[in-house]
Length: 137
Image (cartoon, rainbow, N blue to C red; front, side):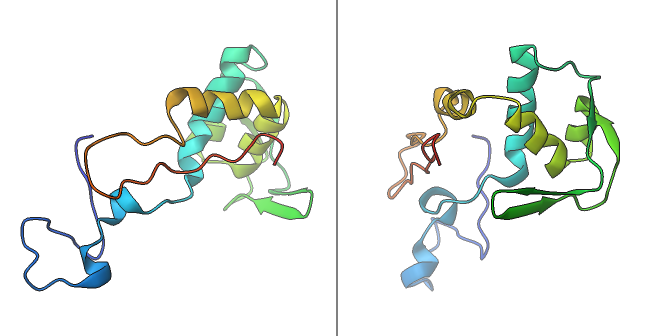
């Protein structure tokens, strides 16, 4: 890891005016939804499985999609995008369609193999391991 950033700022070398929650190094102790950072991993899994190529077209129109009780959308409707463009434009619909083309166990297994949900063991106190939900959920 090259850098850590906290907001509000946190300087472990100067704690004179800090108390309580201000002493928490949020980068290490808190967990965050990975959001769009997972999109390239999903695309890589689909590419690696041979299901798609970088230029495979994916219809993202009309820019909204309902899966179960959740509706997801793209910030801007794009129509048909290649897999490469899905990543370039950060299309939620395109990535959802890629993910839905794969088995849940496969999608769950790759992040686990890459270390998601495990502590990175930097030696900081209070380090959170993160959480990866079971494939069935």
